[in-house]
Length: 316
Image 1 (cartoon, helix red, strand yellow):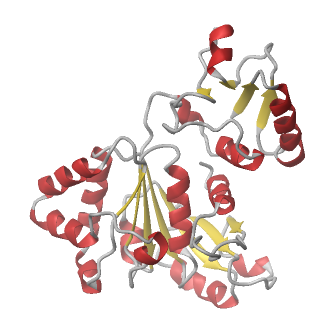
Image 2: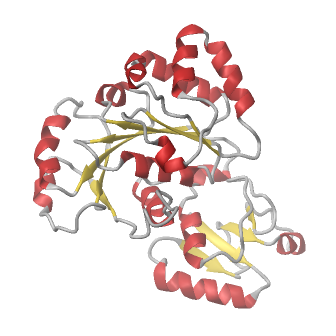
Image 3: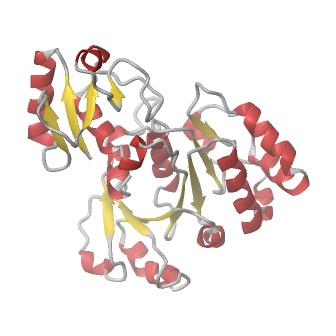
């Protein structure tokens, strides 16, 4: 993606350009106040758009076409660059691209909840996004400190009894102003065992029809559902831990050789260096760095640093 940023605030442009050249020049192609180039996606104020007759794709002052959210012109350089890195070519088209993501622990406790929640939060800046967890025991309340109003118990009941009622409830639940949604995890763990692959795929269809552009699912260790679900992208998480590496080959034996899985190694629990030769059974993998500010005060899971890494590694 190429961007041309135009602004009459020359001090802002100079500061942003300096920050960009120092930290992001190798990751993203940006020009600043250059009016003689073509082929770049233009970001400018509405005054510039009017003066130079520019049909800009993004505006600093209006709600933009991509994420239905105001772009704060004077946000930090890092936040602004991470936002630009999260945009893809499809976002500039009129077509609303529908995406589904599934996260699974390759062995155990590798961070599916934290990372899947952060991806959902990042995607919610680009369109209506829903996150839910199939993990046992439930962790939604710990991370989110609130309830959404629709529980997985409701979902399971209406999926089996009357899907039209479920679809109607979800449509009434979705609003124009909100972009991040989640289902409350069930408090009766055994109920999740009733969710088979047919019901899950029907739920994905209903959510798509209800206007969600992204669905992110935390599968935890629900390997059977993760394996068979119709997902656009499957993400398997691994801890940087010898036990995980040794047991990973056993997990991979149940997958087809041509199945595409993104492997992310979560470094949040250890600073120990491990030779990458232990990962020889994986053709490609990426590291997710730990954000030291997590779990401090009220910040249980939100990390712009982790969100930026996820968007980059998953090529979003």
